[in-house]
Image (cartoon, rainbow, N blue to C red; front, side, top):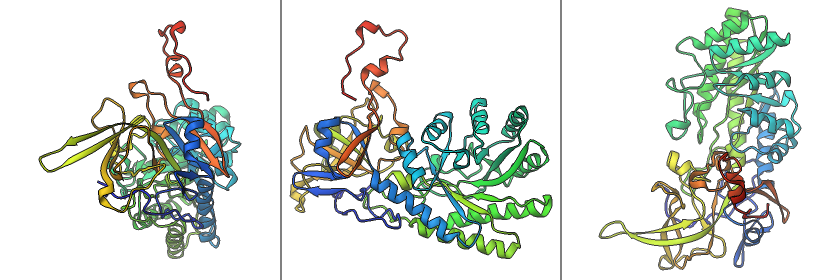
Length: 477
């Protein structure tokens, strides 16, 4: 459980190296009676766009993206170079994809929808990757049509599917093999992705990875251009990445020895962590990660005598999570007697697990603050609150414990930072709540990235809902 401390005890600071030092985006400012982000009044944004609402700080997101590109290019300048792929699964929109491309990143996608967003943003094949453990024929065909740089095969069956699709086109497909290294790190088991008992990749220890490499090498319609490793999510240390890199480089060296082929690229995946509360450790910066990875690649190349590969990484959360916040309006406030000595204050907001499933799914911790006033230093002027949503689930928790002003009341505006990643993209329509829209703020201006839904939008997909009874649009989008 996160410590019940004031959410604004840490002032934001510039991020020249992309270090995720604070829990708020770097343009957040306290002004009298309000909060500002991207030069915009949060109270003003409420009047214009309503709540609940996702807010993305464009300057912050771009700075973190650029920091990753700069760090990787500098660290691998004397080796074979490096690329940074923004993981669209963290948050995908055409506008954000354009930001990433403009800052020099490539785009990593996991579905036809994400791939088409990347294409709509102007990405070219050499700037694209496609992942997934169960790609459809349409997704494989689309990837081959656009000659994506990273078509990542995830199973032996997929090796054959891609080869058949390539043969139909009469063009050799360049593929990357996802390897399950047995090294995993991060938080909840559901987001650790390199242990054996899970759905992703081809195992090193069972021999499945070697069998995939052997089959690809023997197939005239496939060309093996890379090996891929992803060990988990929300990782706040470098040692596991170094161990995974060593395992994948060892496999690459074996391929060179036994099959006479030098694989040109290694993708070391993503999972780089961020701070969600002031109690969380400060993760390494992009430069820290890049430096340790480059050191291991250089060491291994010198030891094996094989030229260093080009390296790519796939940050998503570490770029977009700190750039985001979710804005709510407070509703019911209820004091509940937990036992004979404790009372907990439940603060309900107009969203919940439908716009941020992570606390319910993973037990993830967040913090919160009121928009128009700060918690006083005097403990008697604040209370420890549990912020909850409006859904019919007792697990519908937004923030487990946070100190908020004693005079909190219905109608107050409350913001939770760090929600730029895995909020909107994992949103649901539970209890028929429309998904909030996403706005970008910059230099005092705000615009829609993804328009907010209305109840009418939900019923538009219900084949039996009477059109004449369709509710009126509830917001101007």
